Length: 142
Length: 140
Image (cartoon, rainbow over all chains, first blue to last red; front, side, top):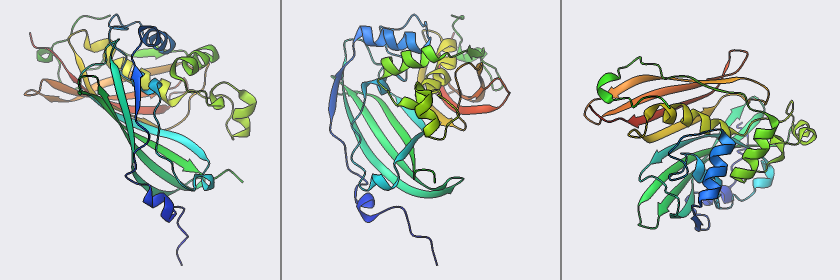
């Protein structure tokens, strides 16, 4: 007898869905505050943005149905591929796709591993970055 | 800032200058504000404890900024970060001393890039975060 899967059919159906597209202006003050917060005095900032700055623009991830069954979410890591640098004054369009979901047995029980791919495109239509982010979801500890 | 490195001079095994961070609770609040990540486990100790954590923990994304910084600090104005990845193996807490070290593990002469492996080590000597970066460097 196999353990019932934590992946519901509604969750499976959400794979491939794209969250709401968002547009963000790259503001000098925001880049400076970010560089200061991470403690990075690189003289290239704020003319260009630090590699992980894009993350602070937020993103709208597509809904994961039945997420209540796995309410605890942890950031498992990211992979970034960079194109054209992000300059202060740019306008960036952000779109996030739920790329895949799988299940794994962990120390604290069954875990849902969701992979999201976020595409960042500037006002010239150039891809500035692609981020693949892993989110680990679990039930509440007993 | 260090001097501009050139692809011609960098070989497999080269160790980048280490980056040392001593994050404080204040920095976590600062990062929460700058990044818009207001998840309470990063600044509200009581809440963090209800989530089964020992206390407040450092944002994964803040650690990833440092994993990138060890490389961007070194690559100079003419270097360009092509890709980087980060994996969280364990959590980190404010008050600790975190050291990011990186070394070149592969060189692509044709593409003029090097691949670096990056590790973040806590004060107790255990690696809590790992990463990889591909950097393009100029030629002489």
